[in-house]
Image (tube, rainbow, N blue to C red; front, side, top):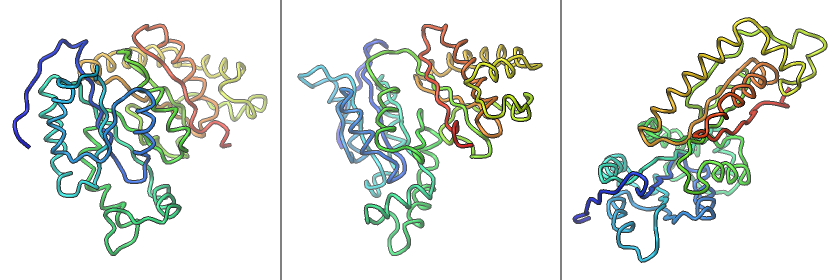
Length: 298
């Protein structure tokens, strides 16, 4: 694609490039629209080879262009295989490059393709599921290299749009941390960076007076937080989180999801997640959001 120039910038003035990729049908178009609403300059279906000249877009634009998002996926065909190498080259140019990977489970993806009556780009003469499995294997290494992962299996358009707004609104360099409670019996959150297990705590389910309440109710919260080992766990785990987040910042990662699970995601994990948020919100460099994935499913 020709020569490209490396521009060195002060860290606080570094332009941001967000590469939006992931599974077909997982919501890339929705994310692109949401980012555009947040003031990002969005380029859809960009061939990976055109990533390198993105540097010129930052330096030659007559406008003050500081945040660019590019949507890249398997529609790029043979060019897609070169994506990671081009991302590494751009990172050497002092551009703040991050990868947002969108994924969803097979059931959700099949349902979405059937609803729009379109074939999967990799299914060929096979089934939609064949294309999904082929794409998942092709994207495996890119999924591992992603800075941010959104699992959209249970998200509608509005929920995904809100999630993008929470993660990418404004120019702030504050670290955005999502603390999520969940129930192990409903499966691990696919987009979590760290997972903690609250099942070492006595289960309020076996207390008749607490069974129908949730971890958001004070009697349950008081019961959970008073159990042996909880104070020690919170102190040590919050310290661990702060250490990990410092490392993330050094690697220019500014968004993470930490999931805390119990059996059903109703009592222990909810109480523990809320308390952990209270402890972490004291840090002015961390913006904490709390979500309870499985609350209400029982």
